Amino acid sequence: MNREITLDETIEVARPLHEVFAYIADFASIEQWDPAVARAERLGEGPPAVGSAYRIHMKAGFALHYRVVEFEAPRRLVMDVTSRPFTAREEILFDATQHGTRVRYIARFRFRAPLAALVRAFPAVMDGVARDTMAGMRRALEDRFEAPRTSLATALADRLVLPGLWQFTRFGYRRAQRRWQPCSAWLGGRHAVVTGASSGIGFATAQALAARGATVTLVGRDARRMRATAADIRRLGGNDAVRVEIADLERMTDVDALVARLRKAGEPIHILVNNAGALFNPRQTTAEGLERSFALLLLAPYRLTEGLQPLLAAAGGARVVNVLSGGMYTQRIDVDDLQSEHGNYSGAAAYARAKRGLMILTGEWASAWAKQRIVVNAMHPGWADTPGIASALPAFRRLTRAVLRNPAEGADTAVWLAAAPEAADLSGRFWLDHEPHPTHVFPHTRETAAERRRLLEALAAI
Image 1 (cartoon, rainbow, N blue to C red):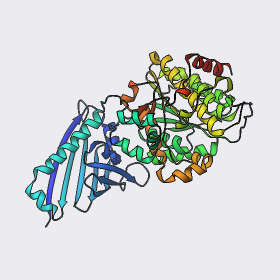
Image 2: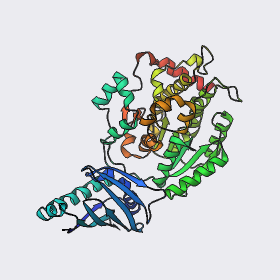
Image 3: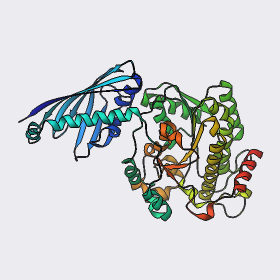
Image 4: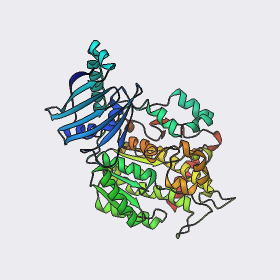
């Protein structure tokens, strides 16, 4: 015996029609606003359209398969739903109102036995499900949340070190995800610059920002590869506003030329993601005589960010996101040996010391530029399975491959720091999975105020 039931719920939110449609139409966002959903995944590539499919994992233990059958942007979305307990056709209608957007959800469910008998006996249950779902959607679209604080569990794990390492895995990511607030921010009209965007964390960050409507400038050194990357991001997100700037960030002449080009164009920069990085063994120097880790990981983001500061200030509320590494926790800055000229060279240690230096810059910029409304934060992507890890740390990848995050999971906090309204409320912090973490876990890595000043002076002098 089958039982058919129709649900019809409406909400209104103070958001423009195109923003509301863009957020809801990518139906993987349902995990942020439907309290019954545990996890949602997009099946296939490309922007939402007829034929787009999603697998929705419910907290009740079964999965739903959604397929878009009608797509009329920005007015209407119709999906067929199949699962073991029921089938359904869900229709979502979007209308502009005087104060924002009205969203109407109409669903026709056909339940299979034995669930059909329960639905017939308790019809109000489904009405409650629809109300809860739409209330969650309203809350996500209103997007008014407080900035996260460090939880007691996270603070204890960081202090004990080994439990803190567990947070870097994909299991740590999924556990943290359960307590996140929705993020429906639309970035249309904002300009983002992402370095190291050809693969891994940089590519995933740029793709996600473009999918949210941002104009994205990709920075990389290989012109052919960067053109292909830009084409991929346009195809995946349906956003044509993806540009390319060619610069080898190990060469300060290239960094300075990039700054000059962007400043000449004069377009404000709302988001700057300093992501470019690599690990070098043995010690190598650039054509300009600089140790490569120092040049790429510390001096380049310093010169780039300092040089673009006027464009960040012109944005009237900019975000700088510096991508760091947990290896930073093991190292102290040595201002007298920034280029690893003394002692036995270790590529991993040089990498970590440069990231420690970038964390120091994060705090200094956050303080110096607060009055210009430039928010500066650093983030750790966790242990993500990227081409950089595969080439630089093959043994580590073999040992940890089963627990590594994918690049999108690694990039998630960088995107959140760039987009979420509440992420603008804290600056100068170090973040992992939308939660602030300490910048030091060992006392011996703490620098003095004098060392911070000397670092700035040393970088400015080069």
